[in-house]
Length: 56
Ligand SMILES: [Zn+2]
Image (cartoon, rainbow, N blue to C red; front, side, top):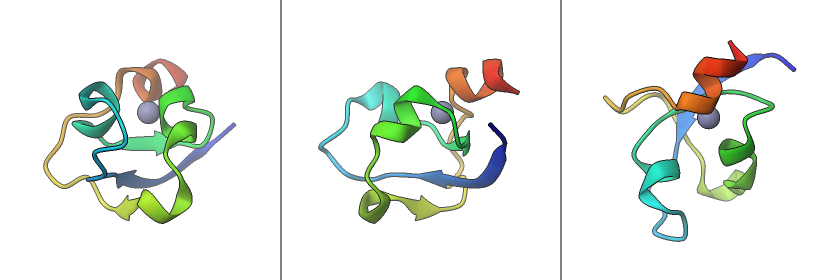
């Protein structure tokens, strides 16, 4: 469990709760559902994912 570089996704495959935020933790349950090829680097001005906040 550790922090990783921020990423987000634009893919409509994911619900807004996953898509409208950015993730930065490798153990985030929502982030883990985002496939590698759907991930884009950076925060893109989005708020941080709640699960990533809890994980630290
Ligand atoms: Zn997350």
